[in-house]
Length: 458
Ligand code: F0G
Image (tube, rainbow, N blue to C red; front, top):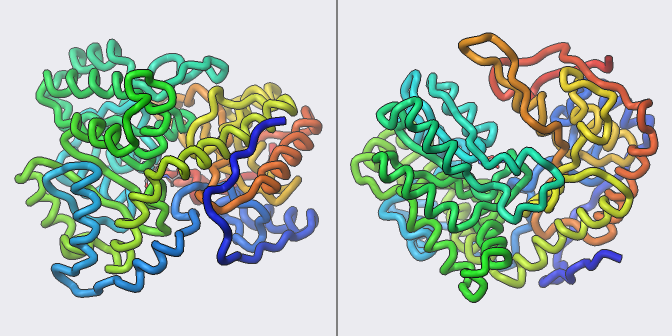
């Protein structure tokens, strides 16, 4: 029997969830154009769409919110957040933003111009979208092991240093206004990046004069993996590992909706003063004054507390242990998943689960639909619906290497029985085998199409 780690908290407040019938789910799904993003939350039993903004805040965070200072400029909430960000990340400047993609947008407004390139281990969809929207070219240079779901490499989020060197040589450092790395690598399975790799990435970028930005969404989960898997850091605290990580970089974008365990918020941090001035001006135009950046003062206080809670080792042991538990349960019933499981989610290899469905008919989309119909569970497709790109030169469609469905685990929300139920539902879907059909678009927008696309069964 897989081990379930006891929660390092007890439950003080609960939220009711209902469970509608299969007939009602069928109707709801059809009305949503077979896109689970179009469902209403009260039509869902267990919502694993995302770990973003769906965590349960602690009593301390709620208490901190009561201290929220809603002054337009110079609120004390801002200074409490500043203290936390200074201590944890150590950047010279930061601005709050309403979430991660706002930080990406503001950063891209300053650095990305048509035709430039932005390398990353793997861009998340909003990062990719923000770069493309300004005419830039996102490039993914993760190690090849990332594309092999059964490869047990401990740091499958690592950047391929040789590919990075070759890429810079090919397009020219002068055409790369910034280089990134995403921790953990969400688009590639929530896989961690080692500190050794980040040292190398930092050196390569800096040798070529390229500013290095970290997509920091899940920095604490990444630090925990480093502590567990990278010998050199076994005795280092999560804070020390985090400080070393960000000390290598020139800035970061952060969606606080992940490892800061809040329902909304983010920030953009950097060391370059001139960049900070440009960022502040753009922020005032788009988000708000630099001491609140599109958030309420109380949100800033919740982030300031949540950043520390997200780094607590007992919490991280439970958090990563919960993901590992779900992975173990799925493994037991023969479901192909990305190994080893990542930090915030278990990724089912829908391509392997449904080999009879071609990429053009979206095996991940098919699995997402079945999980909902079978058990009211909402996961998200991370495959050809989300990531296919039309090559600007050849006009060809480039499919991502894997067709995945992500079961993201909200922080401090679901219990062992929920996870057992999920494994049970996935096992029942697997039994349906070849009866499961693919899907085609009836509507698809150009950018970030997975959110609003509509489908019909093939
Ligand atoms: N970067 C990564 C790696 C992310 O996972 C996300 C969000 C963002 C940036 C954007 O942050 O949502 O606050 O604007 N990921 C969520 C998810 C949506 O479900 O994985 P945001």
